[in-house]
Length: 259
Image (cartoon, rainbow, N blue to C red):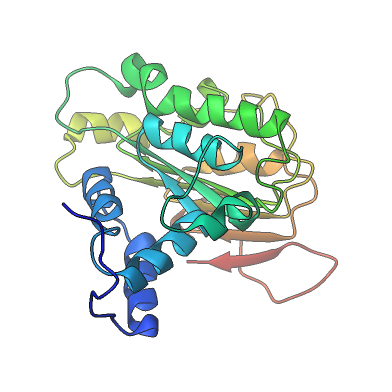
């Protein structure tokens, strides 16, 4: 396909922004998200410009190759051909990074057998790089792990947060499973594990945490290593297991929001 022409009819700026933002944070498959990323440079100049700003502010990584491109953005190795003004300020635009850990419910092998060759290893390498080169994205404050059809304990077994950069103030961990996941797999996932002392890290700078779709063991271990937490967003089922209640603003305590 040819690049967007200057005479391409422009869509209203606010409508483009609303559509892109809505899709950007929707629960879609990695395949659909990748298609959206590729197609967004071909709609119109207005759409492309807005997509660039939104996708840089909140980066979504669906494949290891995307992580490589993200790292280039934080250096002088990446050049924007159509938007040269972004070359000097692309890194400072980044506010959050989301890794999508997706696994097919129909595959015979387990995620652990393939994780380190794909997105699993990608998360660890990215965290390590960001931890050692904090100037790449000086305004990065939030990281998010989106698990789909993944074991709950992957976060701890594979040390996903071990190299969490000290500039990160918010951590978001979310789990979900497809409807076609077998009952045997779901029964195994629902089985509570004792994850006490599984986390070899201290999230000393994290002030906000979201735990959606997790288990009591996952939430308990994460919270036990976040001593300065000021805001917790957690799903009602997990909160009930931990006997956590929603509360009002109080600077002396952590604010809890149930979803």
